[in-house]
Length: 322
Image (cartoon, rainbow, N blue to C red; front, side, top):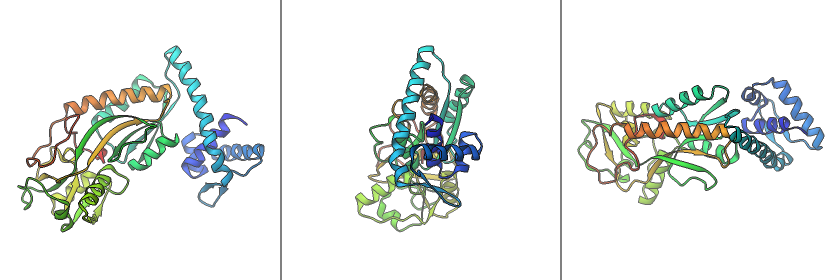
């Protein structure tokens, strides 16, 4: 049994196919398939069920997978200590972000990391926040920028960048534009536009409505806040987002949602990150914190009946606080 065989197995399990795993590993698909098959022969168990388009773990594979992850993590920890002793950063980082992330601080931090550590390879995975958090806990992702309404798992280390309530975004000439706040009951009577399940904003909306015992089912959902804002400005419905997402836009007004649950934007990493992952985390945190502190407050917003964003100033509008 060799370490690269375990890594191939874990990568196939994470990506669901030999083709995707080979692309992530930057090796030939035939090599991945051959090495996993060799591992199966050595262990005496079939670990993967091979389908026409995807693969799935067998019961034996599911039993062995956590141990394979633990073995790889132990080896990574040895390398991390050795790198720290020589002050060298190398290796590979699996970075997760919400779909369509364009926060300036994130982009600046990513560029700064690549400039400082050109030998480190970076694999970027986009997904909804729930999937990214799962990836962190299973070891499939090293560092992730995630939005969440509930506390993150205790096994993760996280730095919160933004914590803010929800807001309804309407055109400037909308009847709600001069209200101090709206309620879930108000939203229930309107066409609601929102991010999809698995995002921090959607989770916060569901928590808020459940507490109010009001059913609000978004009629339109999209991963892009920009698209939802554009639709709201054209009268297609009421966008439920945060004030920071609508900051700086003309033609729309953000109205606080009363008694709103908070959504958070956090930079999270798994326990015992590699030296490369730790360096990526430090660089992103530095640039994101600077970016948030310098960002302008939301443009036009009604006086709040619910508290505004806390811990930092409102973010530059982007899809990333979803």
